[in-house]
Amino acid sequence: MEDLCDQSCISPLCEGDNHTNVALHNDDATLGDMGDVCVESYSSTVGEAGVGLDPCSMDDHDLSPNERRHSRDRARRAAMSLGQRAIINKRRHDSYAAKRLFMTPEEKKEKTRQSKSDYRKRVKEQQVAPKQTLGTPIPSLHLMYLEQKILGLHLMTLQVLRHSHLLLTSRIQCLHMVDRQRHMPLWKRMVNVAYCTFLEVKNLVIGKLMRMSISRWLMKIPTNPMYQIHTMQFMPMSL
Image 1 (spheres, rainbow, N blue to C red):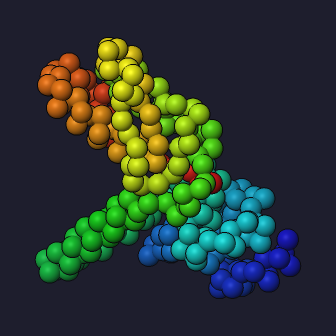
Image 2: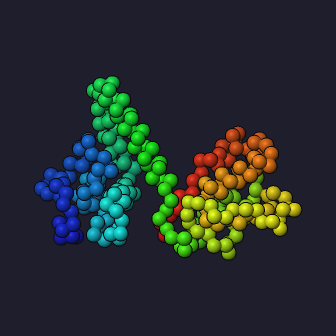
Image 3: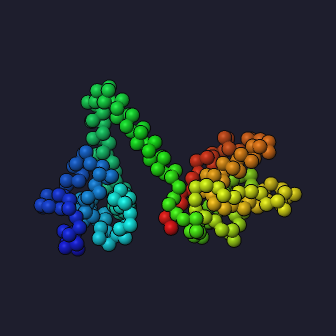
């Protein structure tokens, strides 16, 4: 393990004997800035967190450097206990509060502007369509999750056709009420869903309901927090 760590990790935290307390006392460092810290030195910093995690054993060679860093950071955080997370979060908060205390008004405005810009960028990145080909079907777990979220629409018992070819894209290719079921009540109709995500299904369904003059009170969207379906998101897992 030591040989692997010596070969793969170029972090200065791995050099010397006093690297144990460096990560915790580095107030300027955040969890996102520790991408070059090897797992062994980080685990010795936060106790037994990260034991068994080997940077060389992670199958992330096909990821970009940022995605690889984020995946390893998530693995480190998942291995921490609540107390260890609380210690790191408190140090980060104290460091941030101290910096804000001595900032000039212009610096505070610039910091706020940068924070909002970073937030908008993260939101836009999350909305980007997943890089999958149209010939890649959704696994059964994705389909079950999509069905569960759609069934959360209070008014209708929507049934996704399991035999339909569901694909994971960000555009709706086909979403329509089956013509043969127009005589059936709305909550018994079957929706044929293909080439769509949950958010688009939700938006189209709500739009259809509103066009059909179904009252907002009946939909219970603004009154009952259980049906605040605009907060739901279909986050596809990597295939």
